[in-house]
Structures are given as structure tokens and as C-alpha cells.
Image (cartoon, rainbow over all chains, first blue to last red; front, top):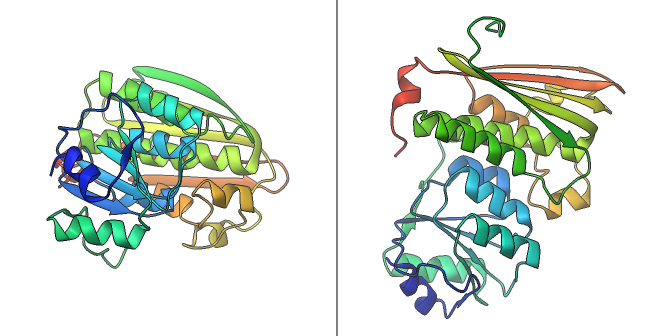
Length: 123
Length: 155
């Protein structure tokens, strides 16, 4: 699915103005815990669905080459986060849907999880 | 743990300021860029970068100051993180998943769920952690370049 479709399905706003909306999103991961994001998300086509808006989410995304970040529950990043995202060329989107609803709608349209379940030793 | 004295091709040192949340994560980003430019396999870069990120967060969250050193050798990559600060009174407890002494500020940033040290162990081939209470903590981890599982592309 293209990032453009993610935007349309979730009535989302593209916060990084000149983001490449043709970018292909293959997988998604949703969490508010960055340690889990680091462990379980798979880049570079992965979409992170999160409520964390601090600059650390961009640093984490950069560390594992995430494709894009979608902020849920109407949360908006501050200026530092935004600048960092632009610098690292990570598209940012924001939706007012809650995390569960955002995940459900994307799943319904064919987006699948980065990993379905953890192994005994957590991944 | 492999000695670092022999055949080191690159040795970079980064200073970390405790409590500097604004730039938390920037050093592991630099580590990643160095490894990317050096042309290491993606899986190796990913493992070292994740472990370095967690280690960097630990210094920022829990210590006064520290330094992170990256060593590149022909057969392995090694990161050493030394800090001055409170130290870890009970390492076994700190290594168990879910144990955390994080305050509200740290949790707001999306950390402090007690997964940092377990994540470092998981993303490295060897890890050594020592600490002196009220003095500081010394962490080393290694990723080997000749292990087959490190060469596989991650799915």
C-alpha cells in the first residue's frame, strides 16, 4: 500500500509537507514502547503506529530504517521532532483515530504486521 | 570477551551527557552511519545500532555522564559504554525483563519498561556488564562478523 492510501484511509494529515506519498508500506508495527519498536519493527517499508511524539521516536526510527511514522489519538510532534524527521527523511502522518482503530482499518486494507507473535524468547 | 588491542581498524569515542534527553539517540545514529559507510551487512548494523541505542538511553536516563566507544576489528564489532553515576545495585535484577527504576519522565519518552538491558543482550553475541554502586557502570558488547546468523538478511 502506498503512503498516500494510508493517509486517505485514516483521514490523516501529512505533517512533513514534502513527504514522498508514493512510498510503499509493506508492514506495520504499533506500540508506545520504543524498546519494543526497536526489537520488533522491520524496516525499510515498515510503518510505525504510535503515540510517542518525542524526538526519540525519530532517532529510533532512523536506527532501524523505518519507512514512515503515523501518530494516533490526535497527537502532534513538537518542532524538534518535526525537524529531525525532515533531516532523516522520515515521513510523519497524524490521525485522530485511536491506535486500535487505525490498526484495524489498515489491516482491513491489507497491511500486515512486521511480526505476528513473539517467540518464547521474545522475538 | 575478545580483546580489543589487536587489529582495531577504527576506534571512535562519543561523549554522553546524563539527562540530555533532547539528543538522546543521536550517538547510536552516528554509530549506524559509520557502520553503513563501512559497508557492513544490514543485520549486523541493525543489531549494533539497537544495542547502542539502548545503552545510550541508559546513560542519559540513569547516569551523570558517560562515553561510548566503537571498535571495528576484522572479525567483530565491539561497543564499550562506561558511565559515572549511581551504578546498578543488583545486576541480576536489572537484567530481568520488566524490571525498571525509571521515573515518569523516562516513561513518557517511551522507555523505562525494563527492556533495555535484555534488548542489548539479545542484539549482541557477547555482553559483559559490571557496576559499582554509587560509582558507575561498565558495559561491553560484541557482534561477530563471521557468524552465519549475522549474515542472513532479516525477513
